[in-house]
Amino acid sequence: MIGFYHFYESDSNGNGFPDGFLLRASRSLREIKAINAKHSKEDESMYGLSEWKNGGEFFDYKGFPIFYRQSGPRPDTLLCLHGFPTASFDYRKIWSELEKAFTVVTLDLIGYGFSAKPYDFDYTTFVQADVVEAFLKNLNAGRVHILAHDYGNTITQELLARRHEGRLGFEIGSICFLNGALFPETHRPILAQKLLISPIGKYFGRFIPDSRFAASLASIFGPGTKPTADELADHVALFKYNEGKLIAHKLIRYMTERAKYRERWVEPLQNMTQPFLFINGSFDPVSGKHLVERFRQLVPDQENIVELPGIGHFPHVESPDEILTHFLRFLGRKDGLAGPPNSSAKP
Image (cartoon, rainbow, N blue to C red; front, side):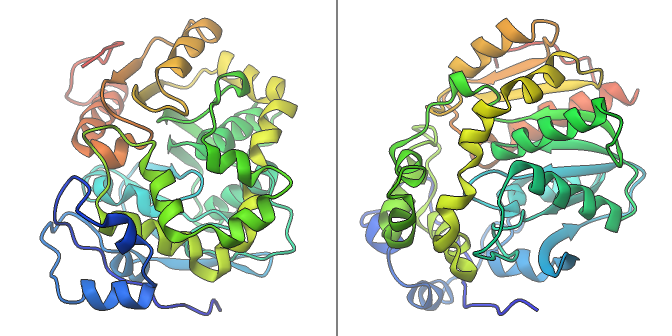
């Protein structure tokens, strides 16, 4: 059983950076919890961090507890995959609407969020894909739609490769990618990522101040959709939970895997037969507009692309209503439900 540390519930009090947000983000979790306990949650569609955890469960993966959430039941199952260095909590702003249409399932990958974070563990994309397959088997999910972001895209590429090999344990009904490096040549890591994957990464991850982590994360949001201090503090808490800082340099090794296994993971994109939608925040310095341009070159047959000007690396956090509109329209059209066909667009 996981030994839970103290964490706090976020409150929402603005869309910009309040004065002293870095100082606030760097306070201890106990201090932040005491501050936020004085405030009530104004937006009832938003989940606080404790509420998100309390609504979840754990399944066992080879002796390690893996956190997950499941809504439903509905006829169709939607799997939501998160990225680095965050967790399934990223989907909190669209969860309530998604669960009206699907059995929505998500998990914190091993090493992330509320899941186990063993130090002596082989954190590879192949293992993460194994975790996802074990998770769906645990739920008896034989067919899923996939909504993926960031590192979740890479994991989905590995799942597609396994499908091509005839050894995937479930059927993929459709795929929607949000921002995330699909090709190593277009990935533009920020300084914190470069330091984590460098020879000093072990020490950088261990000793990075909360304020530096928060500022690095905020730098890849859009200019008008920056996270609040409370939202950043939530991310800090998830990153540090279960001594997560000690393994950050191990988690980020997927960046080298993308280059090593480029052919294995790019070819499945070029040979996809599933309905596909790509929603991209154009302002993202890591995998924004430049990624879309490369995608059009390498995967010209996939034209169902939505570009969101002014939105950064986290479209589902920065502009949840737009994501819901495009995603539900995409799935509605595919299943023959109400909703016009969704073509390539720039809203």
